[in-house]
Length: 273
Image 1 (cartoon, rainbow, N blue to C red):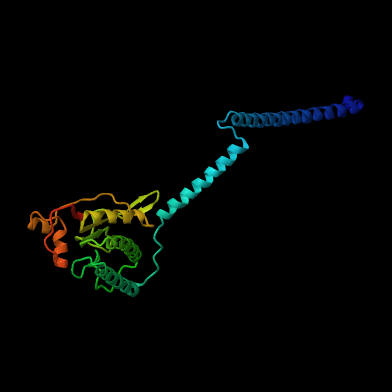
Image 2: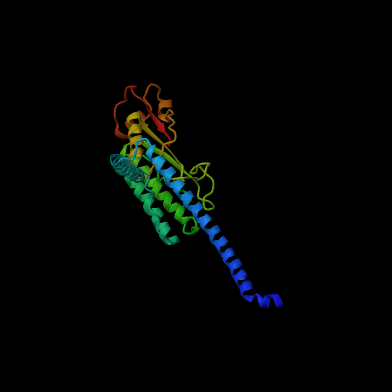
């Protein structure tokens, strides 16, 4: 302690020197880190610049403008694509009474449209909703799905009616669980979910000539709400089996319009979607 007292100035200077040395070392370490970060940033920028220089095509102003034009064209194509895959509008909320009225209205509409298009349909046909007709109580959880199926079936029927086929036999849909039971109205499958949304399969059976089938396929292609025809099955009609030599579907036209028996020509029959 005596030595420190006699050399107090020296001790203070030594302590200050040590502290300054530590601070200088810390500052140097920070500066080295900042220098390393600056070098990394410089290297990254240079690599990006060299990548741009080596690009093919080189990003001249002309090429940049061409790329912008292509991007605009791609957006236009995407817009057209989205128009084709327009989803059906969200069904409105309905209670049981309102839904029962909507069901009756749809069935009357489809039957009237068939009559106006001169398309024969089964007597009092319910378009796969036979289990619902006449009911007054419905599960509220199933009503929105039924309303969606109304819109989808309406789109299918309008395409078929516009083709003026000879006879419409049946349409089958996916059952709405737990509200639908078994029966011939339903397909043994379920909804399919993919990247574009939820696909609801249907199968339709009708009697027509080949030109009518072509019109129906074209109609599905041109609909704004996307319908994809997965398969077409052509089979002889009952009338053809009873009268050999007559073109499929022709007897239906004879019986409805009192035409003379037709000559065998062309192809016609039953189509399924």
